[in-house]
Length: 118
Image 1: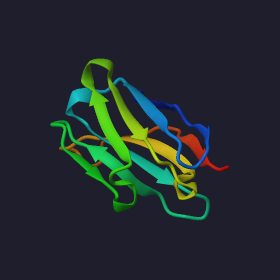
Image 2 (image 1 turned 180 degrees about the horizontal axis):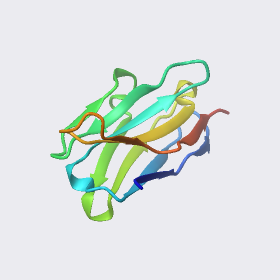
Image 3 (image 1 turned 120 degrees about the vertical axis):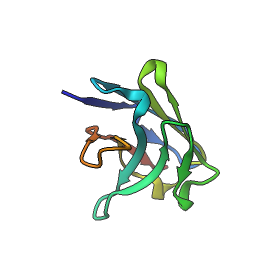
Image 4 (image 1 turned 45 degrees about the vertical axis):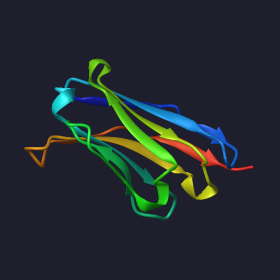
């Protein structure tokens, strides 16, 4: 069974930084497009950042210049470095793995809570 396990969330003050990690197992990680999504209370889940198997990245406008997504295929892991955090970044952050050839082949992690508050 495919597993995506996120870590690195927590409570941070505005302007602070956090680095999220997502470790994948039981998939051919290197071929998957990976993404970070977030869902705040009462809001829909939204894409934060994504990275293709080739390393091409994409960011939501709200996080451009502050967040960086990266991947390490040798470790079957994807990361999200979050800097200059704002209260509006508060949400549960989920890791996603998407097979680029089979749309139905998509997997989600359980999520990690990020709270930005003074």
